[in-house]
Image (cartoon, rainbow, N blue to C red; front, side, top):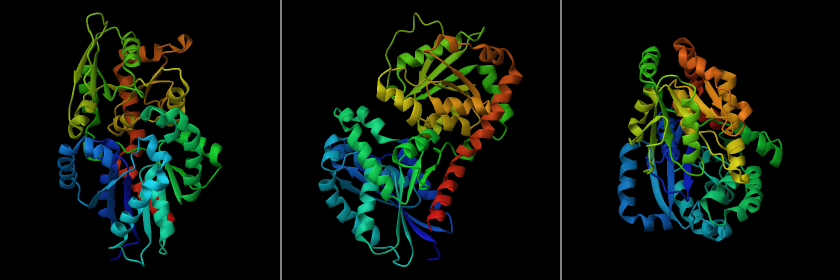
Length: 416
């Protein structure tokens, strides 16, 4: 085996499907790395027992679906840890013992003792388990804590006791960051925040979310733009809830439609059904549902993607918008060369749009910042909109799946 390192992609405590974007990204990263001459790659996905019991009829089908779509070696197991559970946090030391013992045997039995091991951990519990595995081994092991978001700000939304866990999660996060060899975050604001809270450490790196593969981007972007310009369709993709509430989205539509003299269409591709009356809406709105493998077609047909965010005023919502939220859907759109229309409460994403002229921002809260003159001028000027579409493609190169996967390889090389 002429490999520089053995990479284990580890996910503990999350229910994983290929249709779940975050974890399908992890598995596709494994396929990319396996094709290289540098790394031997395995994925270990340990599912929460509680979630599997609730979905027991679907679990085996999901696992078969994953295995049929993934080229590298993937192993599944069960764990009492549940990523969204408060009890898992309070009893994490006890609950991880069985998982660590089982994982140690499963991971290391086929690995070469003379080749370094990199444990790339997809969430907080995965990093916690990996650090215990490292402590039990004498071989060379590096732990990459791939946060993909700051959990202290997210836990209030996923657990009834979440707001009580904010402080304890911060203390736990501090220990994980200091013990890990590398910490990866998905936004630059998150990196700045962690460095302020936990110290300006060289092991904290920004690594962007992955968008689509280059093969999904149309070869002729001028043709893509011309089709989208004629259609005048604005797209929203994703769930509606804590991160993007429906009321904020409708207010965003209303504000954007006021900047255009002609009729434009809004299309929502949401992950859950929505029931409401369209009668009194001053704009055209439609709904659709497509598989993730086909969603890139909706992006390519649209003039821009709308990121409405949330206008809730409570602490955790505001903190997420300003520090922790860098939309996966936004990087997907940019990777295809599709501009963004962004609520400026999403601080980092709004700054990216403004500094790279790859879309427009709007404000739902501050009436003095509601000047849509630039958007109105672009709406009447095809060449102006074509220019921001070109800029979206340029900045989107860094979010292409191939670019992000190469960035992971660079991180792993740095650790060797």
